[in-house]
Image (cartoon, rainbow, N blue to C red; front, side, top):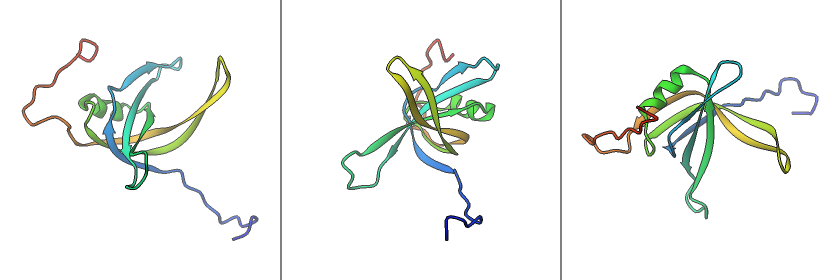
Length: 125
């Protein structure tokens, strides 16, 4: 394939399976949308010195937010979406970070024991 080959296609599709690292946080955007931010802890292949990565995920989809409302930290979830790089100005100058924009989330296994009472904080009640 040459640099001039117009048949070259690219695809930005991410599939992750990992554990919910913390309680998702909702942020109201000026547009009126609600942005849900959550972190997913995923295992690295064996033999790597670092064993897990913590990845930021975001979504504005109501269906994804409803699924995350049923999940708790430690629950296993599958996320499909795409990888995006965000830019902003920090006090130290321009900054950027990659995040997964989640199009769908599926709760695959809970981290709690069957029959265990679900503790709720006042903010999540």
